[in-house]
Length: 539
Image 1 (cartoon, helix red, strand yellow):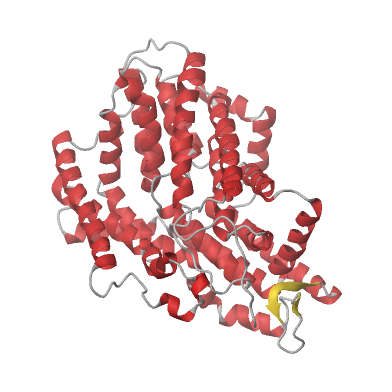
Image 2 (cartoon, rainbow, N blue to C red):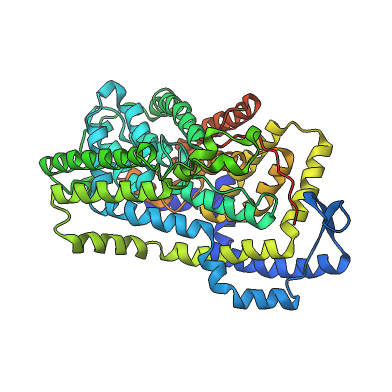
């Protein structure tokens, strides 16, 4: 019965059209492949017709005027040679690749040792009944650091806990799904997603050559994603308790209705898990103390005390000296996840010796196999976009076009959020979408006075809000299975309808947040202003 309902809902209405249209799209890897072919054709035509633009900051050394950027054919001999000769370099120098793999080496241990799952389970199970919804939502948003564990562990567990409290289990599943996926970018600290997105942002800035001095800071959206957490938490709480649960009605099925609900998540005994969590807490304190020591100890290895010697005094700030600290955060999160996962595993008995540790790190790299293939395709698309100069030319003319409309910059950011949210209905991968958009949007917004951090923050809002209503989201079928354990005829349309209020509220509130943030000029993170002024570049 559930299967028939799912099939029926999947073929009707707007969401049925989204699903059918999205399913017709090729895999993101081949989307990049087709885009590269189209890019080659467009570059040839653009070069033949003399498409160009004046560089907004670079000065021509010969004339002293603005440097003219001309479209370059990707079939030119030097570009063909560059493609084949530099292929290994193009792939391995793709910034997101190193960032993500380093963080995932540690996160893989934390996930496979059971640390992430135990931490989320402990937090949610200890919540008072009156605060069950906000605790589930908060743990879900923080649980984004746990990647798959947030979906596989927390969402079914939330259903069980709501049922045990006499509340509708589908409301628990909805609240957890809204936190993990709708609040995908919200968190109280940077993590894997920040490494991924800022790596792509850095690649886009580098390809545009607008600001060679700009480097990615994994904490560049830290303040903003923390504000998202504070904003989204009461919204998810309100929507769950005041909109979703009343519509579901009273739950009369008991705490164990639905065969198989949650047996798979009870994998460790409570005593071992508690012992492991205490050990992981000590390991986390050690990592924090180590980084504090490297900031304040003699020699200050993470403070560049000579940073201001080579720049004008007016441009110098404490953030200039702290740049090595910001850039070390990728390594800090690697070590944090690795040591907490290792400490938990040793204490809980899930890691017996160093071979288990190495195997967990190796397994996490196996899971990154698809990402490596996607990164290979994305790396070449972004690089070739830069070689053709089409990205910068498009950004210059696009920025001029937006300026001519007279639209306020905050409204431009808001429209970008809505565009990212719409695209998210058809392309589920966060990295694929940003790799497609960043080469044009990041330099275009820089020309308009919006920093790369601001562009990344706006994208994150749109990318998060619509995850929970698109059937193409990779975990959508799994959530449907969790829901059907409690209500057999719960179909695809039922799940989408249940999550739609969350999506609307999160999209509207997130858009307002980024617009107000820009109006107030609040930094998005340490050394990360939302506004931007480009330096003059002499090639």
